[in-house]
Image (cartoon, rainbow, N blue to C red):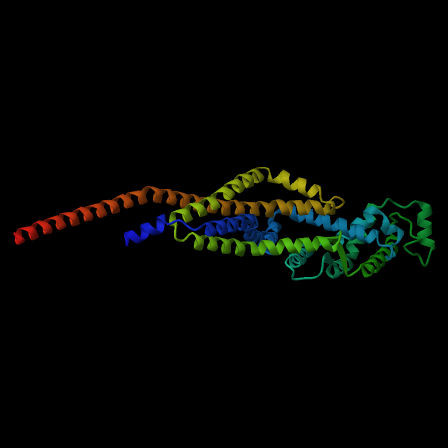
Amino acid sequence: MKGKVINMDIEKPSILAITVTFLLSLIFLINFIPAIFAAPLEFIVFNQNSYVQLLSQPEMKSDLTRVILEQINLQLLGNSQLEIPQVFRQIPVMQSIIKSGVTPQWIEQEYLSLISQMISFLNFKSARYQLKIEMDQYKNEIRKNNVSTTKLILSELSHCNSAQEQIINDTKLLTLQEMPLCKPSASLTPKIQVLIQNGIDDLATQIPFEIQIVELFPLSSQIFTYYSLIRWITRLSPLFLLLSLLGICLLLRRSRKLMLGWIGWLFSVPALLLFISIGFILVGFDQFTALLIAKNYLFQNSSLGGIILSGLQGIGFQFFVWVFITLLIFLVIGLILVLAKKALDKNIPDFIEEKQKLIEEGNSTLSGDLKSGITSRKNKDS
């Protein structure tokens, strides 16, 4: 048995086997980086549960509320199809109306919906490439809170002068367009309250059922094509990595020492280089992410970029931590294989020497037996 193991360890592979091994090693190295990133990408970056955890941060909820309010404000005031009375176009008035429809439950629900839309699209489960907010619940909240909103609007207006009071009192069919922008006396307040409440209900009716927040890949379809290609290459890279590794093992199977050293260095060198690089990224990850977002024009004109930045910093840090751990595992395995190869380098020559001694002893014993046999034969003959 020992003789067979020694022959396996010292047998050299053919030139063809070494050449193919080099090619497979090149394939291994090309697929190493995407393969290392593949699992953390699928289970962290493209996993909806990772983003749900961000809601536990108090600052995330407040920032998200502010961003959605800004987006609704821009959508309503910038929509030429909406018939918004002049009194509602006043910034404090519009802010009061917009805030009246926002509830923590609705914010959380729409946040989860946006994340679901984004992840579904990025995972090729949906052809829809726009992030949109459903407004039905929001519109119902505006109608339900129209009384309290009206009181809030009136409290922020200055008191009417005598001329404005006269207009309100004399005009029987007063409309929001004709209504003076002021707070009337107690006797005329109910008349103004009814106008404002009806105006709020009309405005809620005009609000669209959904509003668009951001369009993904707006430049051209080529961007999504490139994304799809990169995504599938990343998904398939672990398979290519495993196949190339199996091929190397098969080609070098007759030289266990060479196989261990080859695979050990193949694991260790790229893992060590990436390990150091990821370490630097983790140290300055917040600054790195902010710089990356700042160069993306999608978020430069919208406070949505702040939310995206917070999300990327939280999710991205988890992603690189898992990449860091994966690289550490590859590095440890590679070093173990290299050390195992060195151990064989020391042990195999000892086995060879022992085998040679056994062969020499066997030969000397055989020679002695032959000599004694010849001598005894001569004695018999004589």
